[in-house]
Image (cartoon, rainbow, N blue to C red; front, side):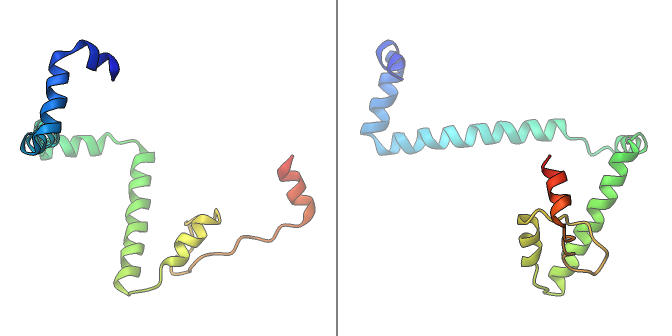
Length: 127
């Protein structure tokens, strides 16, 4: 920053104005926040397509892995939303994730236990 301070008169002016004038600081901060937001919103609107024909074509040419992952994600989301709707306690889902357990399980069965490993299996995994 010292290079900017030493070489740029505009930078020094900007620093002095924002330090001395609270309205200028608020206006400058608003411009720095709003202008990129407006530009980003405009770019997203211009680049997104709501063309049903294009969406149908993209869905037809999707890879089987993508279709399968979409199906799995919909099923998991449906299960999770069902649990929330029934007001079930879902904290064990997070506990299981922290322990490294997978969230794939039989439907309507809560966290499946990790199979017990004997000492020889643990030693094989460590090698």
